[in-house]
Image (cartoon, rainbow, N blue to C red; front, side, top):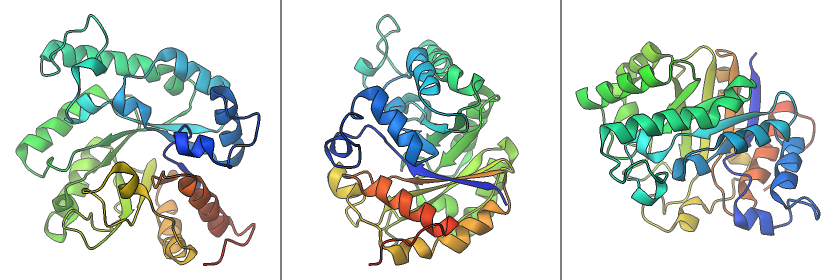
Length: 288
């Protein structure tokens, strides 16, 4: 069975830092990461969606974490077709994110920024989370083809936000498309009653990796504030229902990443720790 790495989608969220999960003396940038890495073996870097990663930060992350700890890095917004503020682009690069030259340079700088992680064996995956309007079709397939050319040396995971990708009539074609590029499909847990809900499917499209992201089951998804969307505390019963599915996934890939994105307070890190307990049986989870 594959190694199952469980973690959270942020270790720097201000509410988490102000809470009680980090002990006193471990709340500066270095202390937070070092402490996090003693509790959980994987983390998702979401800051790279909003700003290009820096080589210096990536190098420091490697230095501050033990061997075996990995980072899943979220692709910069421009690389997934999201709106990107001109102010998020480095000075001297040009201010029009639609310009082909700007896009080429952004790809190069993103690659340069994560290279210490890749070179050090710490890059778990690069997450391409596509926007809700990115739907199945020829244009989307061409976009994915271009991404594959640019990411040939990277482990890539793909999360679709438009539900049509994984509906019954499209699911097999979506899996085949990702398999062609050796992209790992991202399964999600979220509220299941919304028009935008992604079906709770767990396709395997890459032998090396599978990823499951737990967004929480808030019904404010897609409509409320960021805090409303991600404010959710998983009950143990909700985590338990995923245990057999995660073990089944782990039997088909080299590594499985389970990431909690309900980053409101300490809900994500606490849920990650409880899921680890359920998976390895080393301690009893909290009853609810």
